[in-house]
Amino acid sequence: MPLPRISTTLGIGVGTVASLTPGLLPRTPSAQAVLSGLLAVLALGMTVVLRAALRYWGIAPSQRQERMRLPLMIATAVLVVSAAAYAGHWQNRLRAAMGVPQIEADYWVRWVIGTALVIGLLIGAVRSILWVLHTIGGRRGRSTAVVTALLLSLIGAPTLTEWRKSVYASANAELDPTVVQPVSYAGSGSAGSAVSWSSLGAEGRKFVSSAPARIVPVYIGVNSAPDLDSRVALAIRELERSGGFTRAHLVVTIPTGSGWIDATAVAGLDRRFDGDVALVGLQYSYLPSWAAFLFDRDAAAATARSLFDAVEHHLRSLTHKPKLYLYGQSLGALGGTAVFTDDTEQDRRTCAVLWAGPPDNRVHRRGATVLANSSDPVLHWSLNLLWRAPDLTGARIDAPVPPWLPVLGFVQTTADLLAALDVPRGHGHRYDTDQGTAMADC
Image (cartoon, helix red, strand yellow):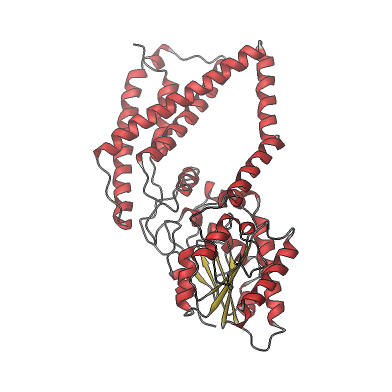
């Protein structure tokens, strides 16, 4: 059986070792296998391109280099095993800090099998696509043109974008029979509300349905009114109708990208203000939070600014004003901090603010309560992570922090984003009821 080429050994070996560098969160063998397989195939593709370039320049492997296949394969295997051993040690450190069971020997068996499957499937898929394109194109030049045309049409296809939006819109509108419409006239979507139950969206319905009975939960979905101004006006009318302005405390609550408001934050705010509080949230998107963060973050800022300005303006007309607070988690924190030009304005216009898990740790901090776990990939993630270490100012060190590595730090953090909520409370992107109870006094 012939040994693999030097480029093949190096590509798969380097990609696998890169995938085993330390991350922020505990990882299942399946998740680790997918990452290892992807990076291995990506590194292999880079070596294939490099080999083709060397051939184009007339540089061919020498006999001496060919004799290095076996020693290189052995050295690479030792390097991969060493990287896996260190990765196992790191995983167990993370798991000990988060109270998660330690990994066992079968973890690495499943990882090896999964990684091999992912590599095999990806290589097979790429070869099949290239064969089809070569068959269609006939000559190499025509094949390249076909590849380019397909990639451009895929990237710019409006039908694909619209299809994705329609999928998320359907999920947002779908009525879950386990989420019960509130009977209290205080809640949005109830029988006495001007906001229909169906228009609240999936996350809005969960919010008002699960809110403690003694608070006033007001929520306006993207389908509750045709544009932002009318949705803001509807929110003010809902607060008036429900008695929200008569409560001692009013919290403008900025949802995440999907419209989600964390139920543990609601419970914490209920406890913090002993039920004498109204919460108002305005949905600005039904996309997954990561998609809203990448492609629609301006909507979060515009919505937060419009809602807060309208509430503040209405409070000026009242004789007895509730104390005004602002809360946001994740993209909600980013949108909320955009309401103000600086820390001074934030302090002047609010009683207090609380930010939880702000992306890239970028919020107005002075005078604010900022909850940030060092293991939260949302706190770390930004394109700047490719070339510089994350800013963990004010973060609570809840688990071992991996050393920052250029490029690889970004890759590992991006992979951890997918599991940011799949950890015990107090770790990753899961913040407990202290999202409410830690809200400061005026």
